[in-house]
Image (tube, rainbow, N blue to C red; front, side):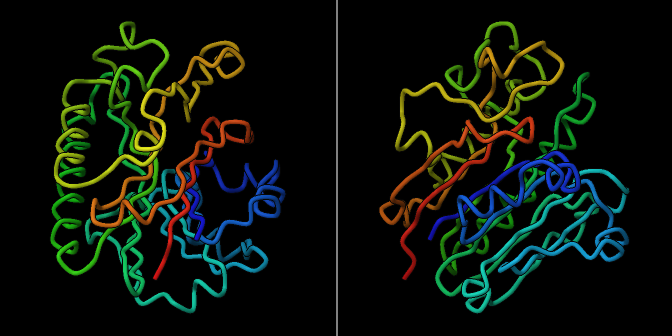
Length: 255
C-alpha cells in the first residue's frame, strides 16, 4: 500500500494547477491532504470529487482556513471501519481512519505563529492528540502522516542557526517531537535516510527559496515501532510542484 501526505495550501488552488496529474501519475492508495482551505458549504456547492476516490473532508469552521481531507481508493475504502476526529477539533486539523489492522491519522499540526502567539495552543493540541493516539494504540498500531510544523533536528532545515527560536524550530516544539518519537514512534524518512538533507517546505517570503533549496523538513510519516518492519519505503517527492510543500510517501505492507 502506498500512502501519501501533502499540504496543498488550498484545494481549489491545487486543482487549478497539477492535482489531477499528480493523482494520475502517482496513483496513491491513500492520500492525506492538509490546509485544504475550503468550507463544508463550498465543498457541497462545488461538488468536489475525484475519479476512483472516496473523499472524507474535515474543514475548519472558519472559511478558507486550515482543514484536512483524505482520499481513499475505492478498494481501500471497502476495508475502512471507522472515521472520526477529536471532539474539540474546530480547525479541521486531524482525521482518524480505522482499518482492520492499523489506524491512520492525517493531521495538520498548528503553526506556533510569527510571534509564537500560538505556541501554547500548539503544545496543548499536540499533547491531546498524542494522548488519544496512545490510548488507541493499545488496540492496533498507527501510521501518522501530515504537516507537523516542526523541524526536529538541525539537519531538518537549511539554516538552523538563523532560525533558532523561530516558529517551527523552538525548543518547546523540538522537545515535544522528541517526546513523541521516544514514546514509541519512528520517523520513517529518517529511518531510511538518516543523514540526508531533504526538505518538504520552502517559504514564499524569501526570493527563490525553493530554487535555492533553502527549506525545512516539516512534513512526516511516523509509525508505531511495532510495524516499522512492514514499512518498505519512505520518500519526499520534492520535485512535485503546485504548493509550497512537497508530498511525502510511505510504502507499507498491509496484512
